[in-house]
Image 1 (tube, one colour):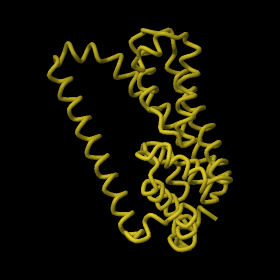
Image 2: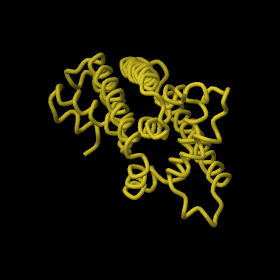
Image 3: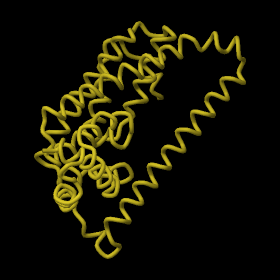
Length: 243
């Protein structure tokens, strides 16, 4: 059963709950299709296949993002090393030591800006809360950036997809299927290029930080200590925002 079929099979209230729950769990560090379920719900609202409001979808997504990130922050602050180890074993592709280390590096360098803009990047979105907590980012600053980023991401994505869905039929009449195919092709190419660039950045960061002899012995706590003590410039954006 795909996401659309799942959402159509339940009541509108359950749709809102599912949107918030999936996005919340993803924000806690569990690799789930949070953005996929948000897009699906917004499209179903646009096509009026469900009696749901785009405003309700955006509110549910915002709440899930903010609450989930906050829970992830608390978990990362108290159980960072153990949490990353468990996630790495359970989801080796999404929560590998290299990916977590790269996320730590980005957050240590850019501070709360990484929290805000990370909401729009899948890798950073998943680990924003746990990594910020593990790096001891002050919670009030984290919450402010997290709430703002979550609302902008949820409302912006819902509005864009809803507008696209309501205009799709008119666009098809005016531009035919060729325009739709070209638009989809461009979106796929852009997404693929961005994903590959992110993967290369993770690989470069891993090769520059961990030697082959010590790669199997590195721990998340060791990386956190190094990031916190060495990589954050005292006068840089991360140095100011992480204190």
